[in-house]
Every structure is written in C-alpha cells, then in structure tokens.
Length: 113
Image 1 (cartoon, rainbow, N blue to C red):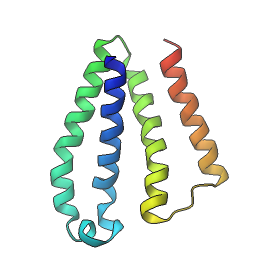
Image 2 (cartoon, rainbow, N blue to C red):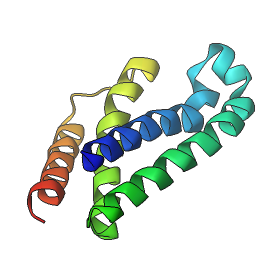
Image 3 (spheres, one colour):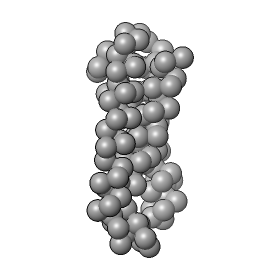
C-alpha cells in the first residue's frame, strides 16, 4: 500500500515539475508568472519526491530502483502533457520506443525485486 501511495506522490510531483519547468513557454498567465510558479511548485515538488522516496526505501526498495521508477514515470507523464499543452507530436517512432522502454523499466522495478 505504501508503494502505491509513493507512486501516486511521484506522479503528482512529475506533473507539478512539468508545469514548474515549462510554465514559461505554455502561454497565458503561466508564461507571464513563470517565476512565481517555480517558487510555489518547487518546495511542493521537493517534498513529494522526498516523501515518496522515503516511503519506498522504507519498504525495502533500493534507491536505484526508485530512481528508475521516477525516471520512467516522469517520461510517461511528459509525453501527454507536452502533446496537450504544447502541441508537440506524440506518435513518433522515437516516442513510442521510449515509452515502451519506460514501461519495461517500471515493470522490471516493480515485478523483479
């Protein structure tokens, strides 16, 4: 149960980190106030990642595994957000292969302990 909650914290952190990093190019209010977005989201993202990492590590998951999980999850979140908000192409061979590799990476970390 702790692992699932930690995964949810990582997913939320990745979404917020995407907006924190890319608010300056999205347009509208976010683009005009990207410094404020970074200042507000930064501590929240840090706490979410730190808490998720501690929760998973306490469950006996190695830090290497946690890192690979957060990387793969971050890439999987990056693709749809970048497509939706910036209109960048999703269905390219490179993205499809990278997405497949991330699914494999996450699956290996969860199912081969």
